[in-house]
Image (tube, rainbow, N blue to C red; front, side, top):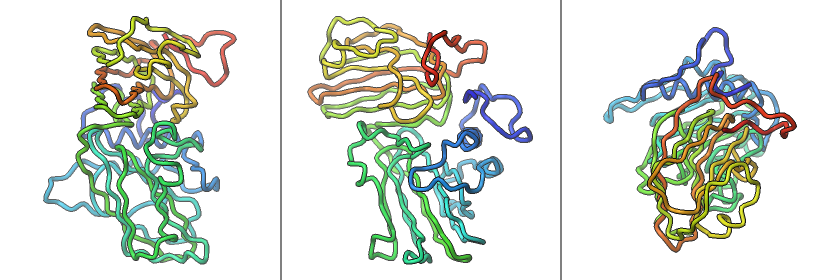
Length: 341
């Protein structure tokens, strides 16, 4: 099933929303997570037990409130948050596999704080904060692109002596996952957002828009992930190590660009880990024209690789493909690969 069939519930979304205002982004993204749940993508690595479906989350779509309004609401076992506020979870029965996905705007990072915690760690309860998302055993951002080691991305309440636990994400997505056995046990989660002057490793809330990634003298890889089949147009690219290489569609190895240390690559795949996605094209020379590619995948990615020796910048536009625009799948192609054009 393609992501453009955004909602799995027959009674919720109906036809695909091809255009979306900012106020509807959270609601549409809940539809997306509902679909991911239906395909098993929300079973994170720590626990594969079945739990509440995410289809009911569509009714929880939230509009942004004024800055002086403190938003509060209950937290569900499986939830999606796109706004600041306080969210309280109280178990009505044993909840053994719960997760909350938090997303902010591309230019924001997320601060999370757990308080009023009443769980029994000795009985197997836990609450963990994760710096990024885990979907179907895959991490976003990839371990190759994240500044922290994999174990450093977890904050475990049960391993802390403090009565409250806090953490800040390195990008615009974060999550918590928890297991609680006893009814009436729970916690409160405070979500706040902080401006990030140099966004890196972004999960887009929208299937269309434009963005500029800048990497100023840092040895780091940055991905912009769009969980839709889209057309991507690169409109400007400035790389310190400018070499006369051309766009190279559908190559699995690029001795030119990968060896240059500074380049941009387009990736496509059906998961969120960029290291497991298919390379569609790469550029390792500066341009001020137009380069475009249609990627008919569940996930489309623009990835900027920087050596740290230069100030690198890439500007691009992206839009959701109509169903009749999805490139035809070619014969004798890998089963898990999606089509590109």
